[in-house]
Length: 310
Image (tube, rainbow, N blue to C red; front, side, top):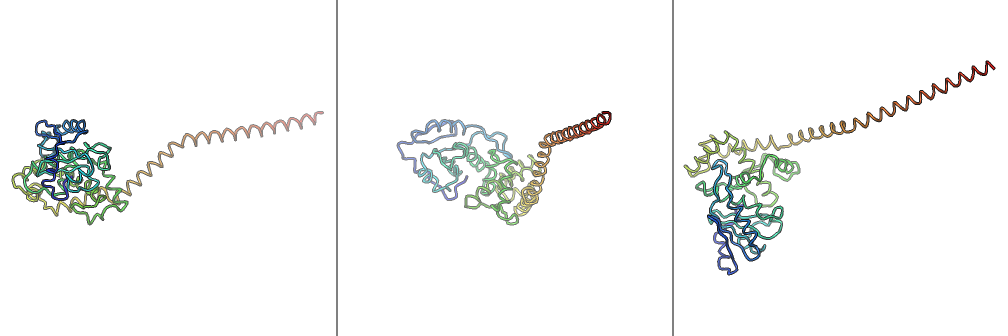
């Protein structure tokens, strides 16, 4: 994620620490404290991997970056000026710096601090690739999408949030950035869906042309109008309509209806052999009863005939 407050100079808190160690490879430096060298080596290898940056380049070399592995929660808070308790990492593009937690906590998805590394590297690469201010929703959405954290399957999380009332009404959705944890987590998904939606309009060539226009004009809104013929307000309206169609109540309910229909069909298919066996068993029992009744009737007639002949 990006810092929510100005973090300029935050990492200088660590520069005078004699215990601070570092590793470097090309444009990547990893700073760490004793006890975290294995993680630092793994971080350096992971950070050196090429980045996929749709619209910018198929495979970009690692951007220049200093990755600081905070050894404790207090060190992380100090280095990031108090990032939200749920953030898994912080990128400061102006300083080419990333701060990651080197400790296990709720900040580290799946217990691995490197899960967030690629997301933060995309922040640095994006901000280096385009001039001027990058809108927060686009910055976070692009980092989420390009780092592989977003795919259409995660749309269920948006749908569930809408169904559970954990998201604002669709008519009030906007391309902004909230401060609360639940709202921010949903905002990552919504912003990624917006970037994905923009990238699909006109295909890869148009998306690449959009970035070229952005680099030339230095302004996001100008590039959006020049490439797609849309103002930001118009794009936001179109995106909101897409969210309604794809993740709204009617689609969710219709999909639930399809799901329950499939479940019912599956139950029928699973129970059909058993019901058939039961019917066959019942028919066999009926036949056996008929045979027994017929046999009793035959025996009775034979007894009557023997009585008469006697």
